[in-house]
Length: 168
Figure 1 (cartoon, rainbow, N blue to C red):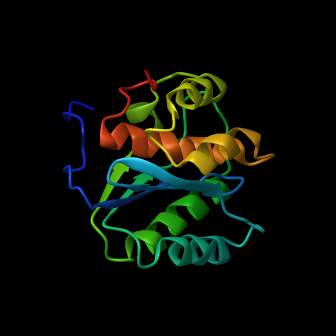
Figure 2 (cartoon, rainbow, N blue to C red):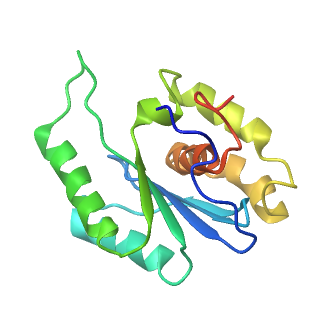
């Protein structure tokens, strides 16, 4: 991706929501004025409509810009057609929410860097000046779906110009 960072115009009061639709559960991160306010992974019981509604309810009323990761099937890897179709359906539902949005492929923001490495790099960048104090202490201890939340943080951090490709 050759676009100059940040991808989102700097506004003192802008709310940015970053979404990683994820096969396990959607990761969502909320930024205000370029600062991380909240990040979570939303429940997904396998029903894509329920997951999409949860995302829409989470961002309703507090989003000026939406940044979403576009599902991608990598060469040499198997991905179920059903899983990719569900993720694309979720993006269609969420994009119908009528907010300005940017789509990024995983390779746009993290390159070929493994999830565990991007997570560690992002965790080091989550200093109190960049995110709320409560979140700074809490995000690293969330069990299970923390990686999905970190992907959403990475997507937003890239779009806001905090990090370059690979989360460096």
